[in-house]
Length: 314
Image (cartoon, rainbow, N blue to C red; front, side, top):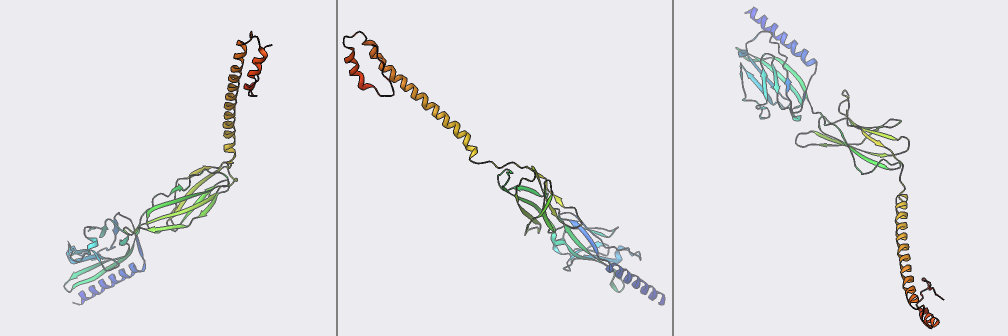
C-alpha cells in the first residue's frame, strides 16, 4: 500500500513540474486564413497509458470545446457548434487539425489530458498556446486618378489599394524614384469587412511634377508586420515633359486656316472681276463699224462699276 502511495505521489509531482514548465513559456501558433491549423497538445504519455484510460480535449478562450477524445473514442457531446466537422485528431502525435481557419478562431487554447482511474478522471497534463491567424494582402495596385501627362508644373493624383488581408497593416508608403529618391508616408484609409473581418486599405498620393528629373518611377508598398518584407506594387514609369502653351497649340493651325480662307476669297474675287470685264468687252467688239462710236460709248458709261475698267477701240 505504501509503495503504491509513493508511486502516485511521484507521478503527480512529475505531472505538476511538466505543467509548470509548459506554462512558463508562451507558445504561439500561426495559421493562414481558410487553411488548416495544427493545434498541439505536447503530451508525451510518460506512463504509457492506454487510450481507454485517457480523456483529451481542446478548449478555446471562451471555454468552448473544440474536440474531445473520450477513452479511445471521439465524443461530440460537448463540442461547440462552431467546430463541428472542422477537426481531425492524429492519435500518434496528439495534434488536432482545425480546418477552414477564420479570424474569429484566433485566441488562447488549452489542451487538457485526464487520466481515468478508479477514482475518476484526474488532470495529468495541461498545455496552452496562442493561435494567430494571418491573411496575406493582395498585391498593391496603383491607379492614376486623373487623365494627365507628366507635364512640368502639373499635380498628378494616384491611389494605391491592397485587399483582403489580416492583421491590420502597420503602414503604407510611396517610393518616388528620380535622380534623388524620396519616400512619402501616405495616409492609410482602413476598411474592415464585416463578414470575414479582413482588411482593405488605400492610400492617396498627390505629386507635383518639377523639372529636376526627366523621369519618375512610382512604387507603393505596404508593411504588414515589422519582421516581414514589405509588399510592393508594380512600378509605374513616367516621363516628364515641358508644359505646352495652350495659345501656341491653336496659333499655327489658325493661321493656316485663315490663310486658306483668304486665298479662296481672292480667287473668287479675281474670277468675278474677269467675268465682269468680259461682259464689258463683248458689246464694244460688235459695235466697231457703227457710225456714231462716241454716242455708243456715252450710253455704256454708267455700266462701269469701278472695279472693272472699260476699254475703248478708237
